[in-house]
Length: 426
Ligand SMILES: NC(=O)C1=CN([C@@H]2O[C@H](COP(=O)(O)OP(=O)(O)OC[C@H]3O[C@@H](n4cnc5c(N)ncnc54)[C@H](O)[C@@H]3O)[C@@H](O)[C@H]2O)C=CC1
Ligand SMILES: CC(=O)N[C@@H]1[C@@H](OP(=O)(O)OP(=O)(O)OC[C@H]2O[C@@H](n3ccc(=O)[nH]c3=O)[C@H](O)[C@@H]2O)O[C@H](C(=O)O)[C@@H](O)[C@@H]1O
Image 1 (cartoon, protein in one colour):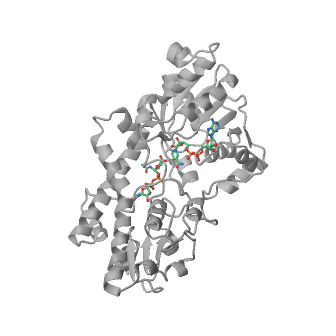
Image 2 (cartoon, helix red, strand yellow):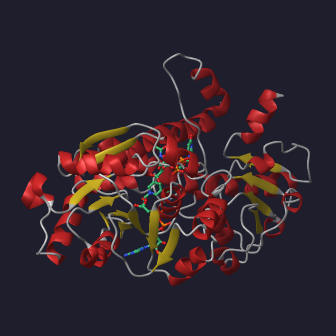
Image 3 (cartoon, protein in one colour):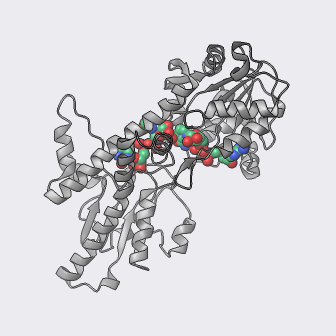
């Protein structure tokens, strides 16, 4: 099947790079977003998210006329839905954005169209999306009732790119393609083969949904193991970073890295989709989430005990102790503060020690609102290193070669093993 015009609904971290890559392959792409500011910005050839090389790609696609953005869906050969799928009130996946997007594109559907759900979704969401489309378009047939003969093909193709490497992974990753019928899958494979150089592996929509959730739960579980080890080692007086390096020399052991907690709006969220659908069975997955969610509180308690140490051993006045946090993003070398354990730790500490906390985040220009409200200034790395306690929260490459003797800091808490590994490599 050939798809000359493609509508990408939702122009965020996933939709915009996807739209730009299709456009770079000379497909006519219309990006749809409910946010008029996003639409206007993209139509000027600019981008609202930080991702290496995305600005150049979008600028070229818009200038050459292959990509434009709009708030209103238009007719196309294929529709890709990449809207948010949050976890509502801490107890169920929120499909409201998928429902709104489906109902918005429904009037534009024609026989022969393909609709692909790319958003990370709980099992059954693709069938639900097809049901919403069918409700809006009783004049068309859909796979749930017409099977292989349906007018519209429906598939789920979860996105698995890693922020920071999106453009490379979009092209080179394998894709799991779950059509509602084999014909739906074939249509989706044809579409993705426009730019995907990895393999397009076909399965059912439900398996594709579960596959995406499984991948992120697997990673969450393995990070939880590392985080639990770090707490055990702290109690036992063992350097967890050295321990992991040694254990990983076993040919069948590959432990991930401990940190201040798991952030981002995917790994910290998606495992809950599984837990909410199968709460009695998903015991390990739930526990991993709880271990990782508990890590920021543990770090705050460590900072508090460092403060008490300075008060007791160095006779410092508690209110005069300054604490600096290195990094606010949810992981290294990005600007994304969403669900960031580093941000949560910084804010919680400032609640305990108001006016005594500063932060460094080289990837953002402006003080974000929560920091402004909590009276936490953004400072330079040099200034931060003059604080009494320095807490390294994000392993940005900006401080990979941080000299240990910089500044006047008396206590350094390295939640990422950056300093340890630098000195171990020396
Ligand atoms: N950001 C990431 O690294 C990854 C995200 N995902 C998944 O991809 C999906 C999208 O995530 P992001 O791109 O990060 O979200 P995002 O929040 O960056 O972007 C979503 C965009 O959708 C727009 N939108 C919301 N409702 C809409 C509607 N009814 N019609 C048109 N536009 C609408 C928003 O205005 C926003 O621009 C989620 O399910 C997420 O879990 C999957 C893999 C990686
Ligand atoms: C299985 C997998 O690797 N999923 C990826 C993940 O992207 P994301 O950027 O959220 O993952 P990440 O790099 O593991 O970071 C998540 C969080 O985990 C922390 N983290 C990560 C690895 C580690 O050893 N220790 C650790 O503490 C990070 O600092 C961060 O706070 O989730 C993405 C998504 O689904 O949005 C997905 O597309 C990506 O491929």
